[in-house]
Image (cartoon, rainbow, N blue to C red):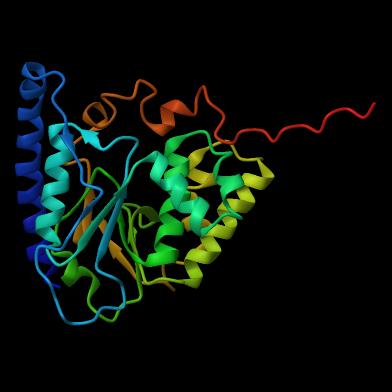
Length: 266
C-alpha cells in the first residue's frame, strides 16, 4: 500500500465528511423528524468471481435502523468503498434472534448485558465466528478500498489505534477463527464472573488488548484503513436514544444484570 497516498486521501475524505456533518445540523433543524432507513441486507454493487479467505460481507448493528442523515451518508460512503461486499444489518431484536438460533448456550449470558453497546460487542464476535466477514461500527468509515486493505489470502485483520492498541470497531475474519473463539470465551467468562463494571473491559477493546498480541496477529493502523466520527458524531448517532453513548449509560446502569438469587430454603 502507498501509505502517503492513503494518508492524503484520508484527509480529503475527512474534510468532505466534516462538511456534510456541519450541513446536517441545519438539515435536521429544518426537518426535525426526518430519518433514513438502513437496509437489513444489500447485494454487492459489483460481483467478483475471485475467492477470498475473508467473506465479502460487511456487518453492522444499531439500536434502530432509522437513522439521521450523517449516519446514512456514512453507510453510503462505505458501500462505495466496498462495492464487492454484501451488506448485512441487524437491530437489537435481530441480534438476539441470531444468538438464540446459532449460540443458544451463550444466549443466557448475552441477555444479562443491560447496555446495548456491550451486547453489540459480543454479537460482533459471534456473527464473524459463524459467518466471517467484516464488522464496522455504525460511525466507522473506510478510507481506502476494503478489497485492497484485506487482500484475498488474509484470514483475519484487526485495527490499531493512535496509541498502537487493538480496538474492536473494525474486525475482519474468516469463519471459525480460533482467536475469535478465545475472545468469545473471555467475554462470557467476564459476564459470569461479574466483577468488572466497565463495558470497555467486559466486552470491548480491553478484551482484545488483554488476549491478542498485536505483534502476532495481522493488524492495520486506523490511519491506513478505517476512521471513526468523520461523517457523524454522538449527537446524530443518539438523537433518538436519551440514554446516550455507552460510557454515559453505564454511569447509572449496571452493565451486567445480577443473577437471580435462589429462593430461601423454608
